[in-house]
Length: 229
Image (cartoon, rainbow, N blue to C red; front, top):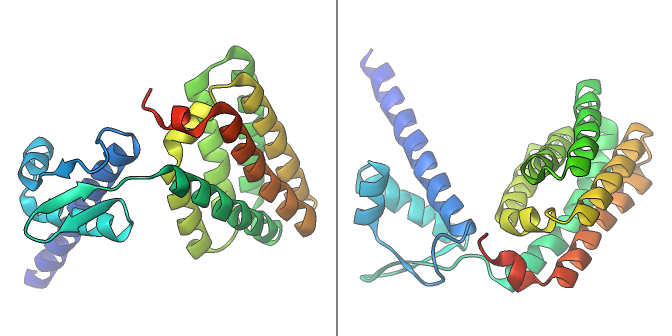
């Protein structure tokens, strides 16, 4: 029983650290902190109702992700995501999304295909109604389902993180009906290629899908898209 309780306490500690980490990371990516703003452990622990230990551990993890800089004897400061970081992430994603679609040709399940087809159907409906929150959520679900379908937990983890890092930019780009419509059409073509098990075409279309997103970002203006709405 003692061992059980000790293991449970250890799991709870890491679970708490994970929750604190995700909350701080979300606030940084949402633009709730300014660049180089100090992240005060005492203030964060009080607002989240936790001790300073999980906050300190979360800040160290965020430093490893490049979102926070810890200056010895001074404190932790927000680094955040820069314009260059956004473009770098999209370029990297373009190749990894292509690889993901290629591997999905072999590993995707019928259940995942049904889920993706339903997502596309619902996306088309909500685009016509200009339901932006639903459009964004469905776009999220499409990509995350594709990541699961690739059959690699490593690739799924990497792509999920990158997908989350550019969430604010993605959400603002999908507030354009024209881009939302084109993105849905691109999703449909990618899925068809995966269903046909055409690896080369699936890879190329998934790669092109992200490059078209980059072109759209440049047309709308990245600095504008990075602002908190």
